[in-house]
Image (cartoon, rainbow, N blue to C red):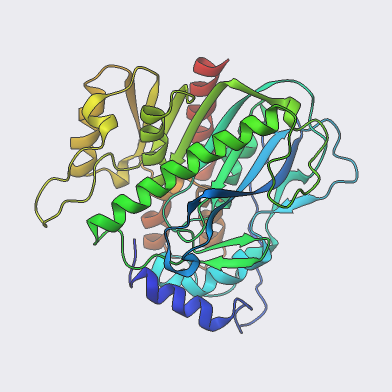
Length: 388
């Protein structure tokens, strides 16, 4: 995934001061597909601070671990509540800086990354009806915002979706104190010990988020700054029914998180590895506990034809052998079709900002009119079956 080290990417971002890129005025604003459920969608952010756990990354040494989550939910009334942008200004300003090394198939200019609107209304009051709760963890380096379209689909169909940003691992997270850029001290794909630390950190983040959601559901305010929350938000959570899904490394966390935490009732791994990186090239990595032991709750392994390889087949076959998991591979699609890029990349291609090879490398050849509903259908039907 990385073309240079994470540390050098962080240095580049810090050196630029997160003020944006000096280039011509962007001329394309990508759009996201509208959700198809009957509910309008509200969204709010929670800044969560784990006072009992130090942050593992060098830029925050000695400070408590911070996590930022976006909560999407069925809204009671959206009048007077503007729609949120897909990317906050700090995250949007950072994307062009990291693009050459993290997203080399995206165009270097011509896109207004910070102008894409979502269909979620900021701080709209929630419907005071207990709903199943679904967590989302994004791929390594990605912000959770790249999973907006599926999160909005779930919320429009009656779920509360809690998307987790993992600071220090995403290329930028807009915390209350300002944007925090990526701070990994190396490449997790080339450093087995670092990869294990990333997994352990995300698993701890996930458990901590569930802890704080319990405070919210009980009528408290878990936001570290005490920011006023949307009306009825705590009354919209039913923590007796909890699912989790994720893409890339986030899919790894969804599967392993369910294995470790009995509060998670069902999970979807969207093309995440289920083994650790090997200590030596050419070896097989140690299987994660979920692949070694399986789970006794439903697990969907959702992949794309363009991204499957022997490593996936080995580890996924191991977990499938335990009987509570099933697999679905989407033909003619590639890895990023499991994210918002399923809809966005074809728009860039149609505008002449990506060529055929770049488009195929990101999302495959499946058109968005098929790929977007396919992913939505797989995710929604799975959670409908196991959480309702």
